[in-house]
Image (cartoon, rainbow, N blue to C red; front, top):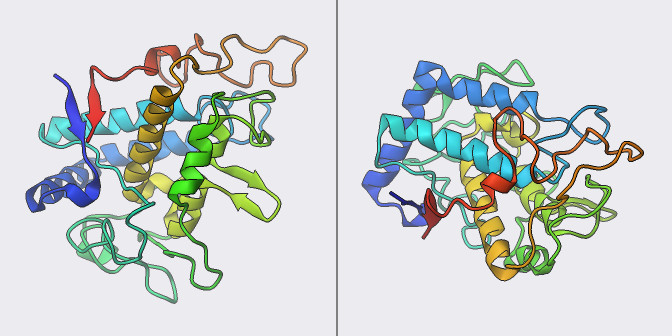
Length: 286
């Protein structure tokens, strides 16, 4: 049976509570930290000589689609009513709007160490200790809006520019491409505007959301649910265009063995990008 992912701003009080409680139960069991470890292990960039599956690569979107789906399945084993909500950062744009409320994700970090002090994921609440990270901090950190060097969230126009591109991705299939929906959404820019869309949101949240251990902040899932929704919107807008590349690069290509083609296995799962293009029988977005 198909279930629905909702805008986080539309969740009822009960839906908010159940989503938070399911996350906290996964954290208490240790299962949540395994998601952090998995993301850290696959957070590799253009300079890495091996396979890139999760970032700076065409499979950015199907990789994270499956990643969010796995987390959602874990949540639903705890509470079958729970789905992963999405945060529409083009509408809820302030540091005090949803999802930064005390009954959801809590608010910003305090000034001197960026430690989140409010909400259920604050270290002092006793339920959310960081065990897998790129620093030794045990507490969740945020720097919403980066006040010392302000940055704005992406706008609807920023998303529309990505959605208007009819081509999914282009050679050389990495962070340097300036055409193609994938990188315009993932957000590796250049010049005076180095961070676009998805990447810019990570930068705006700051703190734990910077780097491979960004999964430590539960907002990660809300961000990537919204990214996933954009892929669905792009698919509807450009029905004759699909995931690229459809075939792996040849042995003479610098990208040989470094990216996942449409029908190749997407690690760490036994699934292909082709098989992840249509999830309409699993979930939909409200």
